[in-house]
Length: 450
Ligand code: TYD
Ligand code: MG
Image (cartoon, rainbow, N blue to C red; front, side, top):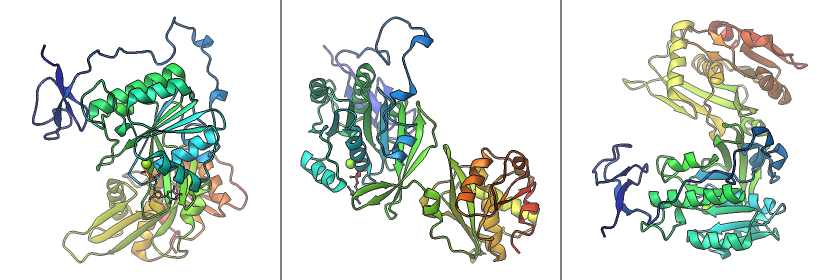
């Protein structure tokens, strides 16, 4: 009998019955590899105990079911704790601290039940040595060095853990497929089987996923669709700060972030990130402003820096780090047209301090102020916060949750806040805080930089 095979793209997971030079889905060349189909097709399975239909009202699910690990930043990103039966994928560059974070996390979780940490990359000895540094010593924490999926499932059956960590999904392989560990079909099949385990037995499971050069979790995109929660652990290797970001969460809000600092004894949570991001701000320097970005449920104040200087080349340079450069170009054009600053021939650099990424339009007004401040060489007053979305006509538009932003600024000792006039009526000003509502960018910059 002819052996059944399929060609699957190692980049995106697209499958084709015949070989193609170029993947029709992701347009990458030479990524299709022949793989044997599994002998018996694994059947689809309900994401929970199978059975008869139930009334929605009768389904048992309570918020109290969540298990908190006690690392506040981690719990918040998960949406308030670990949900029974959930499958969570944690991606990040090698060496960023994924193993460290999960070891610290399950060490705490082991207080609530038996935890099994499966390591496919390091020996149990290596994990133990790291654990010693982190002070991980829970009695109920078990280590297993194993890469065969069948063996892992066997051990899980014996041990019946309450929490499971697979570090990493790319090292696990199943004997049902002939392709190499880490290939698309292996990753997909193993993750699928682990999902059945998580849903069927209600074991919260964490998968570590490697990240490719272009920043996506390696393996099929399907992996991100299969799991309940996708977290990215990011950070600049040159800085000790790490940000855990929820990009998908079936049990909580996305764009929630957790901030950590990598220390000698592992990761320490930073519960006041604004203080940290503002710590090294040069007061009274031109080109610096403080903006407020809402990350999930929490406002974070971040320093934004701009440098505008005469260009020595024909084409002026535009560089933006931590913020969308199209957004910056738009704001430069607004400044040019509406405020009359001549910036077109200038080199412009914008940077967000502390390695944070800002995606919210609420930071527009701050970007504008930093650009104008650098160009005019006049500082923005030090204890002033700016937020508001800027439109093409130079109008300042209202943003969401202004009261949270103002409150955070008051907590950090700011005494003035420039905000959209449309947001003014919805806030009660905190004591010793002056709220200035503005309608246009001219009005915002008028008097700000004297
Ligand atoms: P690790 O968790 O192994 O990263 P990943 O699993 O994402 O590949 O983290 C490795 C890095 O963290 C390594 O460069 C050393 C650093 N580190 C510390 O600075 N302090 C510590 O206590 C630990 C355990 C690691
Ligand atoms: Mg690791």
